[in-house]
Image (cartoon, rainbow over all chains, first blue to last red; front, side, top):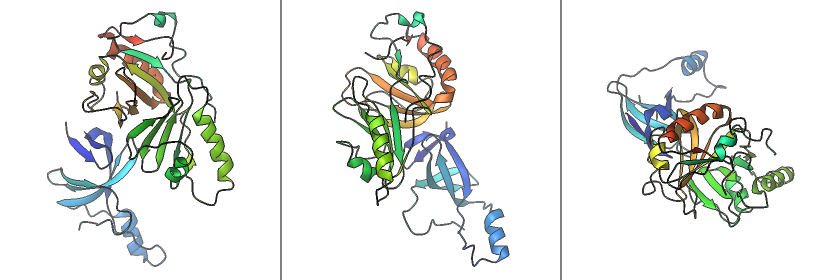
Length: 91
Length: 208
């Protein structure tokens, strides 16, 4: 059984979680060009290596961030969403 | 905010469930007819602090009030409130009414109601074999040494989302189990099956 550590609920079976994809730098819709906006909406980096992702612990609906190696599927760290400041997209 | 349905288990319980069970068994009580409610959102903690004598210091902790009502903190600004089983006062109904009246006049943010009576069924499981039985259908270690009084687990039980609470101040080894109301029929069969080997099961009356 694969275990993931939720910042709120602690270590849990990976089946309690959903991955919601890479963290993207949020662009300002009022100033972004069409290309920047469509990149933000539709394009994924699909990085082979360490990425920062959105995850959700579904029983508590708690959203948090995780760093995962997409090659080995190893979860390196999980942490709560910062109250302010950047979410730290890994490029 | 009164519940629409009385209990999702009502159609399943019959006179066969009036049998007496030995203390060591897994005994399952349906507390769904009892009142419960919830509040969530920015400002909830500040508002609720002024309404109840004590609130849990962190998420995933529960406190029991003097009348037996339970205040369960599920998140930074999310609470579940369960009425005391022997209390003549309905904590949940009182808070729902207070919130409704204050929300029209309050200048500060006070969250929003999250009604639980029609979204979650409410069972109470007691008996020495409860942690052992739950180990078959839940990945969290619910034995008393790792899941002490006042602790809450938001997890999956038999593949459905659940809130499990070990009540403070109750000497019997019991757990509150709140799960999706619409999955109650399925949960009934799971629990009947899981508890059968311990000679336990559902009983007709709510917890005494």
